[in-house]
Every structure is written in structure tokens, then in C-alpha cells.
Length: 80
Image 1: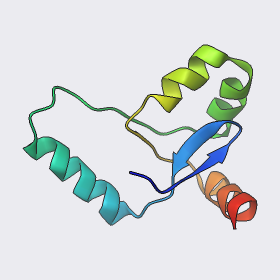
Image 2: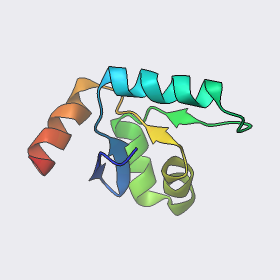
Image 3: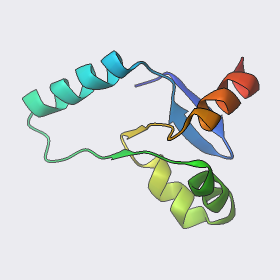
């Protein structure tokens, strides 16, 4: 999934719900052992900006979906 924007050092998916469902369906049909999705909220991003290990953990997720309309608005404003 290549469409993303970065807020406080954490890349967030900039995709539609349909694209996420399609990706998950692809994963379920595959043979890989696991995938993980995170839903960072503003507090997660502030913590990730301060804690390298937490930021790395978030960055390693297969998909990071913004949790909350505030992050969606911030992404739109920051990345036009």
C-alpha cells in the first residue's frame, strides 16, 4: 500500500475503506502467517514522536489507519 502521508514521523494510510477491504481479502487468500494493522490516534503520534521504539513499532505495521477525523483533517491540511 503506497498511498500514505506522514504526521510526526509516522506514515498513515491515505486509502479508501474499499482499498483496505480489498487488501485484507488478499491477505486472507494468501499463505503468509500474519499481518497487522494499527489505528494510531493523536496520542499515539505524540508518543511516537518522543519514543523511537514506539515509532518503529507503528512503522512496521502493514497498514496504519488514522483513528479519528482530526488526523484525517491534519493529513489533508499538511499534505494537500
